[in-house]
Amino acid sequence: MVTPILPLQMQGALVRKRGKLLLGPVDLEISATGLTVVMGPNGAGKTTLLRALHGLERLSGGRVTAPIPFADTWALQAFVFQTPIMMRRSVRDNLAYPLLLHGKGKAEAYKAAADWAERVGLTHVFDLPAPQLSGGEKQKLALARALIRSPEIVFLDEPCANLDGRATREIETILQEVQAAGTRIVMSTHDIGQARRLASEIVFLMHGQVIETGDATGFFAAPRTPQAAALLKGDIVE
Ligand SMILES: Nc1ncnc2c1ncn2[C@@H]1O[C@H](COP(=O)(O)OP(=O)(O)OP(=O)(O)O)[C@@H](O)[C@H]1O
Image (cartoon, rainbow, N blue to C red; front, side, top):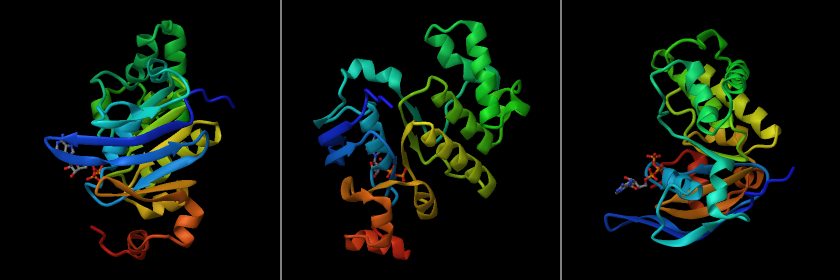
């Protein structure tokens, strides 16, 4: 599959806010395939790293580059925020909106909305106002709305935070299906079990620095750093 936006290269990226260094310097490559999970304790900089890769964060130093010009990357990537932002209107309108906004006709947009609602299990709430959905349903809606324009890469910040086991399993299944269909996924999680279930690659962050990165099987079988070993043992790392 051709993925013109990938690989993404982050080189010497620094994010500083109010005099505090939140991230970096980080060098990282997001290769063309796989599912990358960003792990790390609270405040490690996971959200900041995802936002920086997506181009939402103004870098104080370094850069993120793709094989195509930055302006052309927007149509090819999507971001799912930890707390989904959605319109007060129906699920149907929330789903169709990104397509209508980008010039698709109504018939096509609403057909795609119905298809995606079915794919993520929201058909039964298709006409309900989005604010009436449960947490898990809102997260599925946010995911479907991010995916409806067929991005090549999607960033997800803790997509299952505060969800129960069933909703978490449903979201994970959707992510696995989407990845199998060729979408590159980069997501953060606190949940080591989730990282084990989903990741092909791990980026382990602490204090805004990448402590360890590599193939997920190797990371879980034999972490190379004492911090990663401690995390996997269940110790508190700070
Ligand atoms: N606008 C800001 N100004 C100053 N500090 C900030 C700002 N945004 C985030 N921070 C701080 O930067 C650090 C990294 O935040 P970030 O949200 O990226 O971490 P995280 O790993 O995603 O954390 P969590 O798991 O708690 O969501 C934290 O200490 C946070 O308090």
